[in-house]
Length: 337
Image 1 (cartoon, one colour):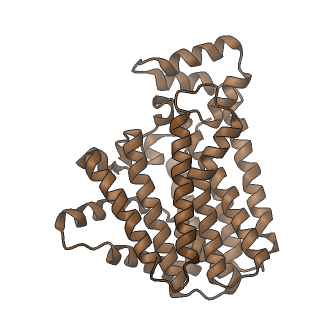
Image 2 (cartoon, helix red, strand yellow):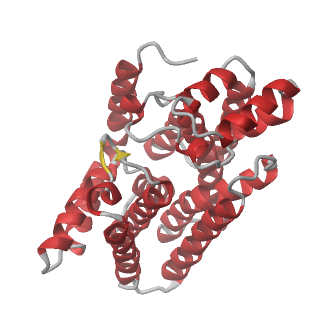
């Protein structure tokens, strides 16, 4: 099931994506610059934490969604697009920092997490700092629509996390509830990125709705793929601590499907492994699930959502930006393990 050449595939995929996004390269650079400038403090300890968390930027998927959605509708991007792209990156960074605290993760983007380096107190406060400044920056725009939309979305992200925590240890979690969790905690922000990018370009209601649909489907597919990687991925390639979902008894789509379809003795074994404290339980669970069809089932669901996303934006003009959005959707389910 594992990719035989994950490093090569990772490098080539990232390189291809970078080439495709040349049409927004200047604006992405402006987002990185704005991110650093906005979060500069007169306190050295704050600057040190912000500098470390800036390493988590990765591919900047969410700022890219803002910029590409705007460009796919209008052709010209404004400073407001850069502002909102910076805002959503701050929100996303805050969720990563808080997630690492909740998951007790030690690795992020192949480097130590804030909570591992400086403790939970510093990590929680840094996440709060990022969130509060995202609202501060968002309020600089003339319209309050963006601020209200960002606030609504962060509420949805928190609701998703709370629903997931409420169902921790629920080994009978339904697929429906799982999808509700990831729609709120992951996909809602992706949808908002596309909605705001298009709205700032004065796009038609039809195009705004199409891009919001694209973002929502893309976000759900992204999280399903992330959950697959948590089971079958390679930590060195993925760049973060794996096996956390299992360790925290958080049910994800491959495990939910396995619990619903596997022979009874295998389901009972999985339940006992999840509840155990064995040092090798993650590897044993991986070896139990891999021969089943549950990984393929989850991957097929992600592919269906990617096709839904691609179909949604088919109504947009045939531009470089739309083609990049199309390629980004495909990249979600082909990114390396």
